[in-house]
Length: 179
Length: 154
Image (cartoon, rainbow over all chains, first blue to last red; front, side, top):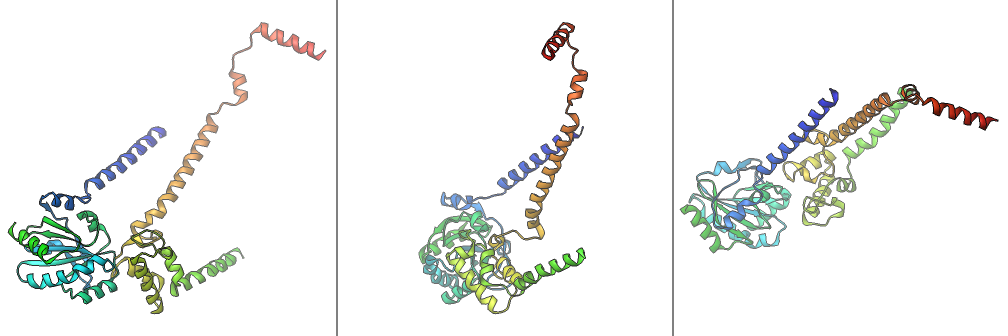
């Protein structure tokens, strides 16, 4: 009888672990966003809420619904990020008030160097801190990378890999505004 | 007397731990933290983020911060590097499972082993029982064995 009980418990534990594994796999977007957008597809933007680097508040993607979001992944110690930083800062000033918001995702960075970076390049748009979770969800493979999210919360092509130029940035924003 | 010795031992151990918490050294923090980029201990990593973290630790030790305050500020706000920078899991919250599960596994294994040994020792047939329950010897064979033994004795 006791042996039978132990067998039932063992089977239950194995099934529970299997369930956790299946749930985990099912809930991973595992980099599908970048791959889908690069194929020209439009996909729902993975939601997130993160601490802001530039203030002590939290910021969620949902709070930006109704506006086009330029989502830029960067790090303060990434050389190519310094190349595009001024373009982004200037792009933000050109597009502000036109239903477009810029949002930086500072990956695996300390706050102080991140703030110095922002100050150095005149970045005044919100920056959130992340420790690779969003990199995984969006399928970011290096820094910098930029995504465009339309007013309905969907990631739309193009997806910029590497430093964004003014031309590519404006093109992405215009496309996102049209969808 | 034993209690007194135990208390003295506990005090002797608590002293250095308290000193480490209040006045952490650069070396011990670098040994306990991990580079989130290369996953090497901080004191063995030279990645940009590791260098940032080392500078941060140096600066905050100089400011008189405690060990747990420095570690907490790296894991959570304002730096938000997450628990991946910890060399060992924390001893509270969900991370406590990392400490408890191996102990529980060892305890379950020991119990299973003890239970198995107990069951084996109970069910094992003794030599005496084998002889008592075993089939009786064939009379012809028994007589032959007796004859052989008698011959051997003489």
